Amino acid sequence: MAVSYPRKVLNSIGPKEVFTEVVKERKAQVLFLNSYRFNEQRSCAELTNLLEALDGKPQELCREISHHINDEARHAVWLTDLLCELGEDIGNPKSGSYIDELNALFDKGADAVQQEDGLISALASINATEKRGCQTFSAHIAALRQAPATEENQRIRETLEKILPEEAGHVRWGSRWLGQIASRSPEHRQRVNAAKSKYALIEQAAFEAVMDITAGAELRRLGHLVEIANTLPAWERPGYVLERLPQALLAPNLQKSRLFAVQRVLEDKPEKLVEQFIPMFLSGLRHPRPPMATSQN
Ligand SMILES: [Fe+2]
Ligand SMILES: [Fe+2]
Image (cartoon, rainbow, N blue to C red; front, side):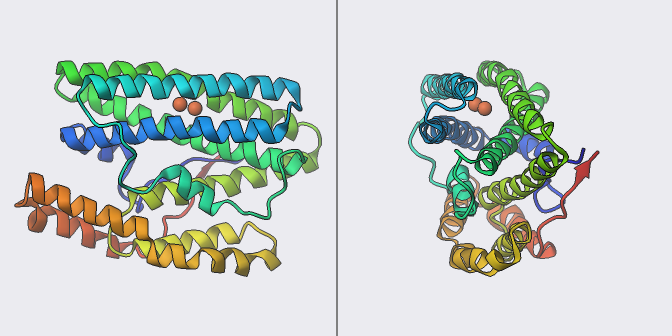
């Protein structure tokens, strides 16, 4: 069975490279920790909405989702405690939110979760985001293992190492439910695989929307919209792209993130603005299109 995995950003920067740099800069590392905290907290709200929409049926699934909410709330608590103990802010991140980007890319015409296709979509989207969580935490932990073992880095690593196995459990949980639905018939398997591919594309687009602030990001966002639209029935494609076109091209959150990044460089290391930041920003022009999807069998 074809399984899509989260792709690299801009074909070139993988999670390993990102976190090798992140763990060197305390401020950057704290921003990442706060975005994890925010996403964990927000995922409780999203899963609660799903639970209410399911309205108790199927009972086994609802029961497991309530445990899932408990896990995500615990992760948010661990990260909140960590940031407080490090003397850091726990306000909402100034850059765009990954979950907001995901929600903006969801296709509003999708079936309600009480219907089978709606449930497949919900499980496939959760599965894609949980895989991203595992990839991110694994890369962050691996970078911390190579970084100086300061007391602070050890404390951060311990927290992420507590969360990671539970996120891996969430991936297995989603895969088990999707596998059960796929086993009902060849037609079910085809629908499950189509949903997995579609939500892997949506998740990648949302991830890049918050990570990619380099020149040309607006065009890559448009490229993602076209990729996602191609997974929809032909008559829904123009409407899907047109509805999201202003957001992709004007991208107020992207402009905010760029300004925030420049401010940080100017405050901390102004000499790096010309030396490193501007070349990094312009490097985006080498990749006007989103990277191609990869898959493994
Ligand atoms: Fe979590
Ligand atoms: Fe999770």
